[in-house]
Length: 480
Image 1 (cartoon, rainbow, N blue to C red):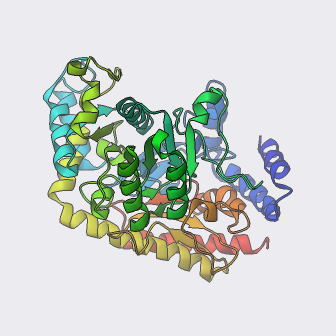
Image 2 (cartoon, helix red, strand yellow):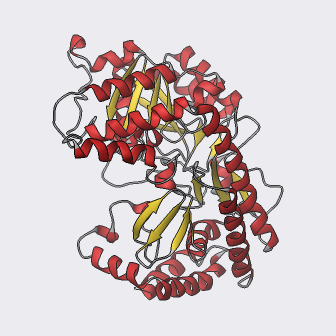
């Protein structure tokens, strides 16, 4: 198994100047296999019935992922008994840490009373969750669903129906879920096409032709794209802080221009705040920028560790879902939409974030700053240049997010997806193939070089992270 994976990595990367990391990857893979035999066994069993051994690609660290047995606060324990400091935190959803008592106690209580699993009927909880979301974000209407992917897809459907237009504009590197209007412009190609390609088979060409890919944090390009196509654009979908595209905050100029252009050309502005919603304060990041979108997509944190997402916005747009308009946009909901236990977790966590906002968010900002400093300092002491994105002067508040990059030049400016994913600017192999496995061997977990602080992380955890990065840097330096 290890040899097959090693050959795939080596064969796909021989043309890149950083392919000399391949011996390091091979060494680490062998060490990982020696120290994690139980996870390796579970992985082999899983692959008999699950494609690649799991149901979410990001979780399947190669050559095999740690299989988690318990998770509490800032730490995990895997099947082999390793205690792992976790910065992935449930895809950055666990702002309070893993399995916070404030949520799990409520869930245990209602389960004991005979409530919590799916009833298939309405209850008061979803109305209470919707009321909190509307009050904290200033939207008129909310529809709850189970994933950010669905919420983003439904928001685009609403925009296309409301405007009567077909084109969907997004930014290169922006991930808005595995849905038809997102699966273009995700992966950077170093053949000169950048983020211009379609990233999946199985979609009709006519559908992908309707997706226009612009550039993040590039006002001139955005204005030009609207000048050319604006009267055909139904919506512009953008994250105020792009996640998978580099964990880069938008500039205020860029978001304000997006708002102005959408208004001028009659397109809807959709903020995808699946990551950023309730991450920076008890509300949306767009509100902190002072930019109001027409629709907002929420997920991750709003679920309290359970599968909850939402799309929300102006009443005249959202009411296309309703009976008075004949359910013009047919988003009736899925079986597990507004699941009772999920709604209880969401209500409990959101209420806590609102009530303790002045304590939680300053602490998260401080932890985020310490986290980014720990990574950069640890690598620097080991002789490796590393830079963390996740914060900027344009961001209205402190940030608890990070993504690690390895620029070839200390002067490189990392404020666009094009910069951080260009192999001429940053070492892609070190970030994507080396870092995650190397940190795991030091009992630290990140996924594709990015993650977040949770409230339960401590200053001692940041010291642990810094020392882990120092040891990883020394390991990397031996192969340079």
